[in-house]
Length: 251
Image (cartoon, rainbow, N blue to C red):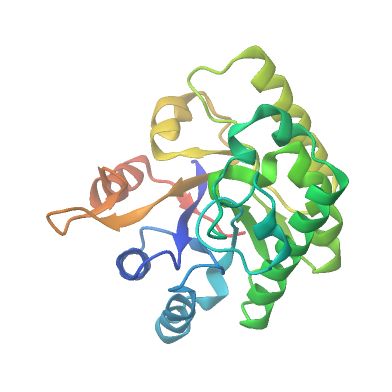
């Protein structure tokens, strides 16, 4: 039997996503969600989680690529923000800055990460799990700054770098293995595998039976009001896992 965690990313990004996440919890389609604390509908998301009783399953979706940062200094660095002070994701699109940043670039990023961690904890959410928007926490330049903050703020579990793939380049495979090994040695809890629903459907038959896999989903409503994981029907995904007879787990 496969053991899986199903996490809904992007909680707090919009009212529609907030409603979709709530519907997923109500219908046992997900086991957890992660919150974007810099987004304008974050407060609404937390209120809904506490009202619906799933606040113990809300982690932090660290965000350095979308929306407006919580801190001021990072707004003045063009690799992070545009001239209006909104994240532009430029550092994430450049291999060099994904691997290494200057001292000042690391400093302002660390200040922003810490502000997001503090805001998350101030909500009183007990999950203490972290993943990130566009997987930025798996960048070497980000993890170097993030690692000491995980210990400082008591983060107990962190998402792996994506290691469920049908095909992956040799260099990317090596990097991901090294990152995941370092993460597992850091003392935080991790799953054995991580990927999307599609990744899992392609790879699940080759996974060890005693492993734990995290599957990320992005619940939302399409133009017809249907609950989807980006484009895939969420009820279809639920039926797939039911037929597979998976065991649902938690971080």
